[in-house]
Length: 411
Image (cartoon, rainbow, N blue to C red; front, side, top):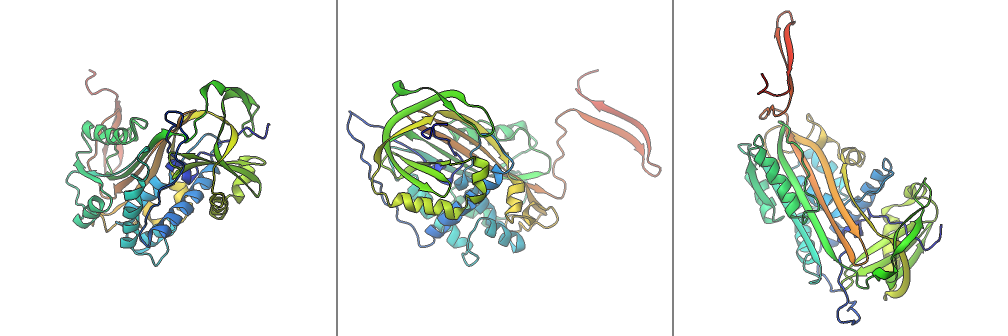
């Protein structure tokens, strides 16, 4: 395979922060990033989120040999919202999974989040970047007011009680996800089981143009070699764009800016295969690469040949998060979510839906992280689809009748 064919690693943490702007009137774009002033704890929180994101990404790749993308920022935000409702071992395990230092208080974590997001969303006026949070809970379920207040005040979350047994609840939740991703993720839930009492959600969206766009007339079909497959021709962009180039142990990397260069895309191409590279791809490798790129102060004009791509991805993250130390939260008997409610609740699942499209103009991407919270004691039992029924005598367990109902209106 030609060395200048770039293999996209779309799950990197920096990737979901990539946004862009275009040249106007044939003038060279202004390539000067705006400084972001952070609280004292914010750099620690950012490092924690990045370290969490790299580990989560590499653990997901262990079982996936297909296009995938995660949003570390979206996942860490939603899980940090959950952290506010945890106590005991459940809290310490989740805090460790998110890589927050043990001595960092939840108030410091929340303040760091506000400090970062408040400026991140407005740092480049030519960039469409949006982040939204939500808490949807079962109407009538007793949620502690301090938790909801923190979600509303610190995380600016939409907080709404819904009748989960009503079809409108599913519509409301999916519409929120769609609205906050510009329609790129139209559905995150296909049903609401009877034991679910809360959904903690984060949505992240960006859209914009490259600082130096690719010329569409240069796009052509060129060979691309996927891991474990045969070379095939794919639509491939080509252009001399502003970029930084760096090498590491077993890989080459390029960084391309968006807008005023606050946000960039970093592409890493392993010398061998992705699967051979991942065991050595750690947060420390990522951090060293970023430092090497930052030492290069200018984006030089480099010819880049890169395939266009577009895909959606969905992943339940329970197994990966448990392997990273978040164990008790998923246990109906051990979870301590007493900061949310005195009811016996636990995390049913953590799921992420993502979308990405990269073309000559730039990048559009979106992510929704959904944390489903279930209750051990029975909630509303919604028989909303075909079911089996039986009649028995209890003391002898004699089965008298058994049948199924496919359509209740069928004679």
